[in-house]
Length: 288
Ligand code: BEZ
Ligand code: FE
Image (tube, rainbow, N blue to C red):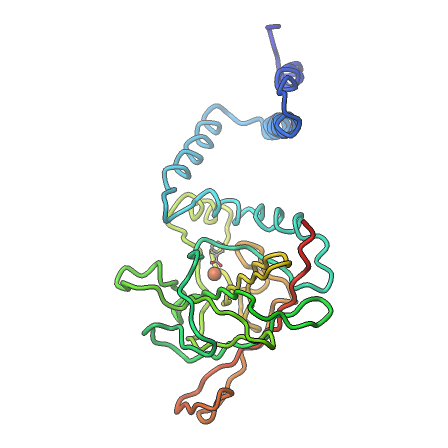
């Protein structure tokens, strides 16, 4: 077969990839060809625009290393990460809703005792985070692994700070027999996603800001339950309705409650104002 034109080439490519022996590969290949060809027919790009698109993808690839994943950032900023997340968490029921993992998770963070201060020397407004982990019927889950991570009050994670030689504002906890967890840290702030690369250029061209509302990340796992990847967002944040990665859900917003200096929930004493953040997480039973 030869002499393809804009009316015949799509079918020709579809017939070629239909030879893929593995069913899912065949399905993916066919869908990619169908949608890509439809996109090109819709846009009718000039040769120069096609070259620009290739250069954009090339720059995106060159920006990736073991610390920076520009392709995931692109997926995040185009809402694809949240779409994949939504498709994979359709039957959450009463379970806590999910949201994106983001690029600042460090696997196997240092384990701390419940109630520990995890700010590791980073200064800021004290924050007491606490809550429970339970199953949908309310049964507390003891021994659940609770990974927590968040930015500082200027919106920077530890891994973004060259002058910080240790991990901070991140920890792993195990819930107690009542399913409870608690920790001290500092209040996070809204922050821009890394916008010094092609994704940042794209946002500018699209007339968009790069900000995420202030939040604390959680990854919670327990035997027999689906691992929960989520955040708790600060009520009242100016970016709740325009999160650059489309990650906000009403059920994940909580007031960071301001407390005056004095006795704290864990019976310590603070001579400065501090904030409290409570969230009670519900895990769904592992269906796999
Ligand atoms: C984050 O919340 O850490 C994040 C999520 C997606 C893209 C960039 C940052
Ligand atoms: Fe974050």
